[in-house]
Image (cartoon, rainbow, N blue to C red):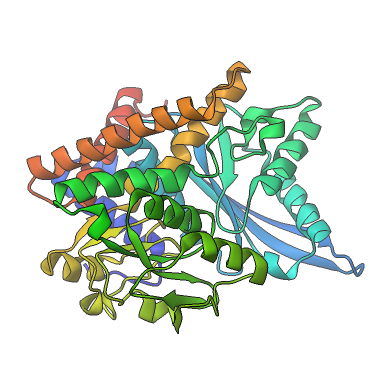
Length: 417
C-alpha cells in the first residue's frame, strides 16, 4: 500500500495494519484499534507581552485506554498537526504495551514557536492550554509529560494549573516535573538511558564491540545530548552530531563533554573546534556503524535510505523511518531497533514517577535505574524472541507483541454496553 510519508498518521496506521494482518485480528478489533478514542481540539486566546491577544490551537488525543490511563507528551512546535498528534498517540499505546506498562497512549501539542515567545508568554499559553484540556486530564485518566520544546518547568506550570482548579496539589497528574514538586530521580536521562540499554543489547546480538563502533546522532536536545554522553562513556566513538542549526563531523571522534559545554554557551553546535560542518541531510549519510535519529519523524526516506551507511539504527525519535526507507534498509542488511522499543525509557520512568506520586513515597536514582534496566532489557528480549519466532524484523516483532497485548485487553473488556 502506498503511504504518504509526509503524514505520520498514515505511517502509523500502515504499521498497525500489517501487524493486525499477521495476528489475524478480527475486522471489529482492527476497526477499534485503528481509531483514536478521543480527539480534543482547542482554540484559545493568550495575551502577549505587548498587550495584543493571539489565538492558539492545541490538541490532546487519546488513542486507547484499555490497559490503563492515557499517557503521552506535550509538544510545542509550529509543525504540530492533528494527524501528527494522532500518530504519536497511537505509537504511545504500542510503546507502553511493549514495555509492559499499564498505560494507554495519548499525545498533545500546541501550534506555536516557543523560541519566539518570552517566558511569561510561554507560561500564560501553557496555563491556558492546560485549562482547556483539563476536562480530560487527571491522575487516573490522562497524564501528560514533556516532549519536543517542553521541559520540567512547563510541566510544573501544567501541574500547578490543574491543581489550582482542584483546590489541592495533584502531583500525579503530570510526569517529568522538577524534583521539588514530585518529580522523579533519573527522569531527565530516562529516554537516553533506555536508548543506551537497547543499543548495548543490539551490539551483543550483532557481535559488535562498543570501543570499535562509531556513532552519529541526529538531534542534540535532551534525548540526543544525553545519549551522546552515555554512549561516549560506554566506549563508543561519537563522530557526528546535529541540532536545528545543522551538523558537525569529525571521523576521529568528538569530545561530547566539550560539545555539551559549547552548545550551552553558544546555543548550538555550529563551529565546535576540531569539527567540520555538515547539513542535517548529510549527517544521516555519514560513514558510521550506528545511526541514532533523535529529532523528528520522516528523516529516513526512500530519497536517502540507499546512501545510509550505518549497520545499526536506533530510533530515539518517534517515527524517523518511513516504511519505504525501511524496506531499502532491510534489503541492505541494516538492523533497526524501532522507536516503540528504543525510546520507551522515558515513559517507563514517567510510570515510576506517577507511582511514586500516588503513594507519596520516592525511590533513589540507583533504584530507578535498576528498575529501568530490568524493564528495557526484558522488552528488548521479548521483542527479539517474537521477531525470531515469526521470522520478521524487530519493528514487526515489537508491533506483534504490543498489538496483541492491547487487543487482548480490549477483547477481555468487551464492547460497552
